[in-house]
Length: 466
Ligand code: ADP
Ligand code: ADP
Ligand code: MG
Picture 1: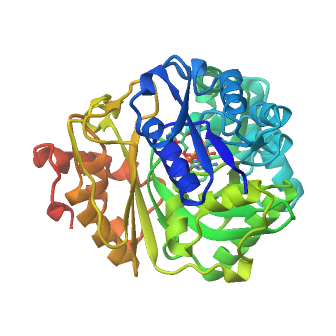
Picture 2: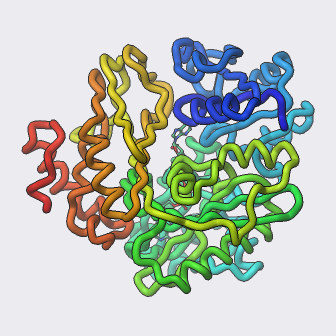
């Protein structure tokens, strides 16, 4: 096994990985920016190294400082978490060059899959269905519009380097093409330093269903079932569940096989996710591969009993997968809520500040992954996700009840969060029936916010929704 691993991240995922290292006898080394001197990930790890000032470019994106910290502390591996450098092939290469095992796939695989338009081409070549769209990127708004004419409006202009719902624009008709191309390209340039754009047909109100993959260095590739992440606001996930409700068994089987094929085609190693959109008729299309651990990985851990971060460490240590495809059985139902420090009524503006008091829910089948503690500061410099609440129940209804109870029990004071909104979703009739798609938040946001306001900005009991 790797002996000492540097965790090149912060927030809840750094905490998750540090805890895992401790649980399996690997020494964790934390890194932190000046803004994170009192952050939980730094406090938990016995060893920690300051890597720069608060701005991400100076610290959590500062490859040189991170690698120097790993070398100086005698690490043999680096876990990148998600976000930051996790899908940066140059970083993976720099780790290798410094004699450090990057806990993820090889740099060329990140390169091939991280570029979304290249990944599409690779999938198409290997018989995995992709959304109709451009072959590779388009150089101008005119070229994008020409592709759109052929596949038919509405379309999406998407950033090749995209992630986290950024650099993506819906285009309803030809007249919008020019402006939307510029908007998508500019956002992509500023977020990812790469403004290249490709075109995809807009699948109307699809479900977002993704498959968790594990692949070891011996060529074994398995999937661990799916997650439904269709509850999204502006293409960003708010709530995830596993398994996906009401998916035809034959389609689930085909999607799982396609996901494994996709990972094999990429020469994949370690944990990864294959994302699909699924239309009303059950047709599924590959949209992207995330070459890293994903925010919502705990729901898969709960229904499969597989510890994904432990598997990541094992794979990176050159050990084979601890299970075969036929050993993977999904039982029960898991749901995750991503709680962010944002103001629901102010268009989800980030709400950093001091957490005056915190109480986390607990009990049978309830898990909270969070870097918060009473008195901690939520920094304005970083992502606003502050906690993931994950529950496990025997059935979907059981899990929903448990999540309602967990969120009712949870207290965060000092900052506003999305918690009341997620609590209300758990009472919405279509959600209860499992009858929803990525259009859910757009359709329901107004009503949900109204109920929230009627409850005086406190947690409503959701009765008016059911
Ligand atoms: P995606 O939504 O990109 O398909 P995930 O569901 O794993 O993939 O979400 C990853 C997103 O989570 C990032 O793009 C980022 O917006 C957000 N995020 C949350 N915490 C962090 C963090 N510590 N560092 C970077 N990004 C984070
Ligand atoms: P990111 O890298 O930002 O996560 P994705 O390609 O995964 O970008 O897309 C994010 C979300 O946008 C998806 O989960 C889905 O809801 C929506 N989306 C992406 N592509 C399409 C499409 N072709 N048609 C309809 N919705 C899409
Ligand atoms: Mg995605």
